[in-house]
Length: 283
Image 1 (cartoon, rainbow, N blue to C red):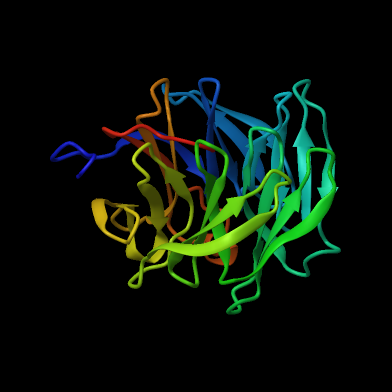
Image 2: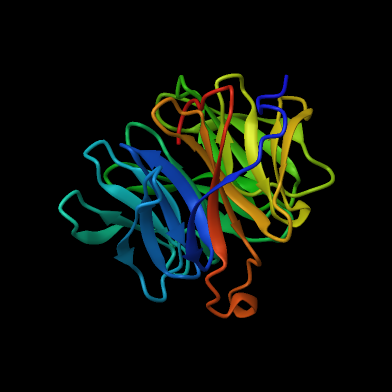
């Protein structure tokens, strides 16, 4: 079943970013990173945008929240997880350089504060998911992945789904009581395009950005595509379901993903569409 009204077109929300990434809805605001703009922002449904934190040279990516309201931020180049406290102070929550030689990528954080962080390695089977406990303790949670990217956690907290970009598939893991990952299995394949950032809805549909296909898609378990949102010349990077009823789909797009090709051009934008099925789980 499609979840978009016939003829739905995205509405413009915000612009002026180099490469918007990692959208997360929290307490009336959309949080997101500007990866190549080296900053973290929030925006409201009215497009009221605030630069929350500047991170020169650190390439912020995935975001998440600890139970006390602190924001966790993936610092890709530093291979670290930063913590922005409710009082605006920032610190290093965990260093991951001893576990992975590559840059870091996207992340999902459980309601209890455990973070699962992907590595930025495009070699087949070389990708990792790293686990960071609320106290900052680190470990490898899963290996053998084909470029792990966006991740989500089911409403019951017992399943993690990750987009394997180079594998062109969505892969699920069981999460046990100790936050270990097991029971690896493929949820859906996307043989014609590589998925990037993702969001989960209440029917198990996975919204995903497909950068080189220039569209967002809603993919059902098994691989059926129920909805598509084309992005024209823009690359579809990442998405999130938010708003008061979690039925606003935020769409982040950019003209390119290479910092050298973008050369600081602020052409990345955020749009929205309304959907019939609300978001579920985390983020």
